[in-house]
Image 1 (cartoon, helix red, strand yellow):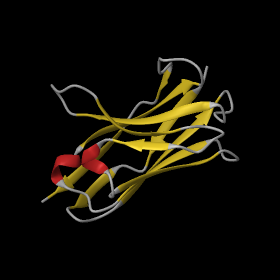
Image 2 (tube, one colour; image 1 turned 30 degrees about the horizontal axis):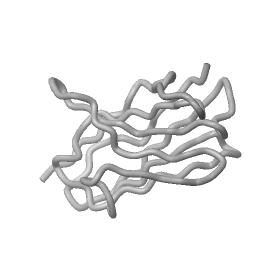
Image 3 (cartoon, one colour; image 1 turned 180 degrees about the horizontal axis):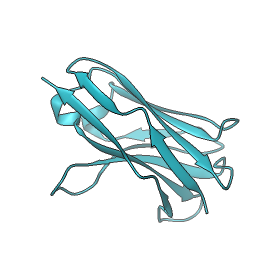
Length: 119
């Protein structure tokens, strides 16, 4: 089982930037697809983007394309979410999750980190 810990959240003004980190332990995440999600109280969890393992492919939800970038450092067993030009609607708790290659379910989730964007 992979354990995930997010960090890097905080309060930022609109137009600012934050970088979230997701540190994995327990197993190497080289062959895991890593996803970032976000959620606000009373709302459904939203997929933000993800990155594949060995063959580096990325995908993003439309609302963050061009502003958010996902990267990974397999040597550090860590995934990052660089968020630029933040908007108030990006405010949420951000979670990272791991899905083993060849499977369809995210089996591991972090505890989340709060991102608040003020206008």
